[in-house]
Length: 386
Length: 245
Image 1 (cartoon, rainbow over the protein chains, first blue to last red):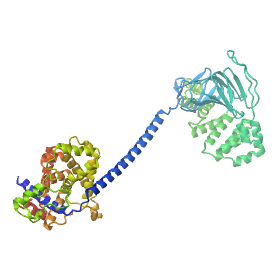
Image 2 (cartoon, rainbow over the protein chains, first blue to last red):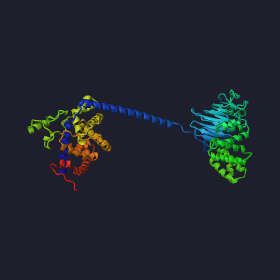
Image 3 (cartoon, rainbow over the protein chains, first blue to last red):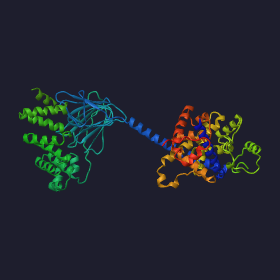
Image 4 (cartoon, helix red, strand yellow):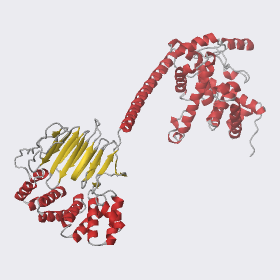
């Protein structure tokens, strides 16, 4: 093809011109060029090596993170009578025991009329508040297990065991009977942890020295006497005394300091403690005044909602209409709060007692939806059934 | 003297034939030669290489022996220079590109299966480096507006001005071609590679090479017709069909 021949001719002329231009081109010697090539090769190899090390380190970090994350045990779950349980929810046994079954095999059974709440759940165990009555704990032993039963000022620390814990809210006394394993009990009024051994029965109260109780017949060791040890604290503050559950002494200390003085300077947390102290020290007038102060000064805080709940409890028997208003306020402000089940249950009681059928039915439906296994579930069902 | 003393190696065979043929005794230059004669043979550095010699060389390269590396540079530097300049023209970064070719040849010589394929291997690495340089230049196109001196110009000192302008125009036109078409076009028509060898160094099939060449030829014909310098270059001998206006 003529075209191809033309291109070849032109190409050759281009080649000749290029070669002519290259004749006088300055070139470095072979040795110099070789040195430059080796230096560049070494530099690149070093760079690649550093990059490989960095990538390897990054891969190790990523792999470690993945292993740690994957190996991190997931949180335990639990169920109550077959339904999934939720932390924060109150569980009440009425005429029959109620069992909480945990995913690691641990079983916590509330005896009749007992009431408890799962405060928190972790991969290693759970923290359970026993408000009243007796529970039986059958905790699966694991090396890393961490279980705690909170009863008043006491905490029963459990690793793997079978025991009964009974909290008398009126006398503020805890009784622990250990059938298997080992537990330790700590408390605000205990100077050190109190271990409990198999077969031992312990009764503790921060109010007085409790007499020993009989041991289970199948156990060999003799029952021990539980003594309340008071830490020798010089001039404890009203708050320290309050946390030790010495409400009478705490209130006296607060009065010496000046209730109004404390209230004027206190933040939401301290003011709530002062109000709770007054309530537990059987001074409802002071308690109501401080709860209202919390509502006025810290309206959006958690403590203000809690104050609304306690104002409802304090009014429950003497002023049901006012109690209804406070419980409704609490539920409006904290529909999923720690006291929501109790507030809704008491609201249901008030409406039921007042004969307010429509409101009671609505509340019953809400209650069963939110707390199908709650302490007022039976009442709610009976209201809806009738 | 036919070849510059600056060349690492001279080819006595061509020199002898040339002197006998023309009976000239004075030094010759390219300008004196008719176009049908070429000073540079396709493979001046390795007209005949037996397998044993190449085998020793490749074995030494694999072991990283300095002597083998030196020998490789001596034998193939002119070839690499030529392959690069055929594709890119004579640019200011030619030295760096040559160095890059040999760095990669040393690194990758372990991939060479047969020692007799060494030349083709070196050529393919040179083509790869040239392609990378073209792509890098294409990514730096905005530098032309910002700092024209930063771009490697075609350096053609010491040649006839008309020829210099023609070659400059040639490379300006081929710079518009896609990289693969440019490489095929330049190696085919400037270097004179055969299709099979061209396909080997471009790591593609002969049919692909033909397709690239057809595309390049059409485009080159259209664009070169608008350059006066190239019209003279192309119309000597066989008239190049001008594009209809």
